[in-house]
Each structure stands twice: as structure tokens, then as C-alpha cells.
Length: 263
Image 1 (cartoon, rainbow, N blue to C red):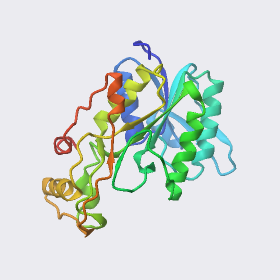
Image 2: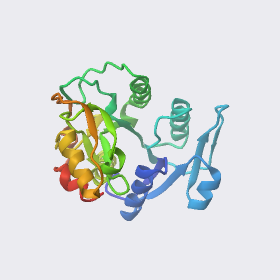
Image 3: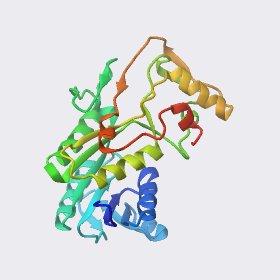
């Protein structure tokens, strides 16, 4: 971002996109945040971007020479929406395209994964994530991908999602999470230092407690029933999110229990 106000188009006005738009505006960046519905866009006073079932694009994005950040979650027309977004971004002389992907793309084996790890792509979701990533990485200097670990933060308290449930995973499996605050800072860091030759980054807290430890505290905090588990085997599937710290980025929440207090 060359340390001065620039234009940023944010595809997706959900939990990540809306917060990112607000944070960027606070540092003087002009943003155009989008949602799929024209009606909702008018109500929220934002822009719209939608590829319908006939693969026709409807939008009112107009920012030129902008960075684009795709916060759209995989769904119907996901790849076609990404294709059309990239084509439109190119027409509008974009400065770069950042795709928010997921660390769910990594295999389930009990090892540590980083950006150089081999992908096996067993599930349909993993295949879809990889297809999207490859489309962006093919943009070379104009494309980057950030793989996000499990998201926590305001309105996404982990205790709410597991309370009273029986999880088919192990109680002793390592947790890979990242707080919204660190996601925002990480994305802004990448935009500011776009000229780095690296294209792919993980965002995951360096703290990896077990699910039993993490969710027990989460549920205790909310005074709700903790989950139960199908297994009790040690599983150290760890996502290494340290590479991005080479870009003068530091995780604010190096302890997930502290991060939970700000959810």
C-alpha cells in the first residue's frame, strides 16, 4: 500500500470483509465492500457483486488501481465468481489480488504443515480450495493467497459452536485457530508489503492447545456444557503460521486462551 491511502475492493461483506473494510477506512483507505444482493447492498450502503446461475455478472464496482481481497466463502458458483472477479479486477487495472483461503486444505495427518507442505487433496472442499488458489497464484506478482486457520473473535466465540455436542475428533487433537484481530493485521500487512516475492502465507496462532483444554475453557467461560469426543489419541496436526512474521508482522494473540477473552 506504499504507506499511503489506496483503493481496496473487498469481495464479501461477512464477518471478515466488513471488519476489514472498517479497519482499512480507519487508516485512510478508500474501500468498496460488496455483497451478492442489490437490495442488501443498498440497505448497507455498500456495493454488490454477484454471478447468477447463468454465470452472468452483476456489479457496480468502480474502483480502479485497487487491491482486491476476496473474502467469499466456497459456495455455488465459487470458481466462476472468482474467475469473473479476476477478469473485472484486471479491467479495472488492479494492483493485486489476495485470496482468503483455509488451512483446511492441508492433510489430516498428525504432522506440522507449512506453506511448502505437499497437499493430498482428498475431500471435495480441499479440491475446491486448491482450484481457487491456483487461479490466483497464476497471476504471479499480482496474486497472493492467505490460508486462515479456524476463526475466532467477536460474535465467534468457540464455546457457542461446540456446546453439548459430541465431536467425532480426538480430545487430544491440537487446535489451530487465529483471532480476527490477527487476521486483519495480517491482511493489511500483506497489502502494505505487496512487493515481497512470496505468494502464499498461513495465518494461525503459534499456540496449539488440545481440543479438550481449549473447548473446556471456552464452555466454562460461557457456563455451558462442554463437548464430548469420539477419540482420545494424541494428534499433533500443527499449522505453522510463522512465515508471515518475516514481513514485520507479529501475532497479538500468541495465547489462544487470552484470545478467547476477546470473543
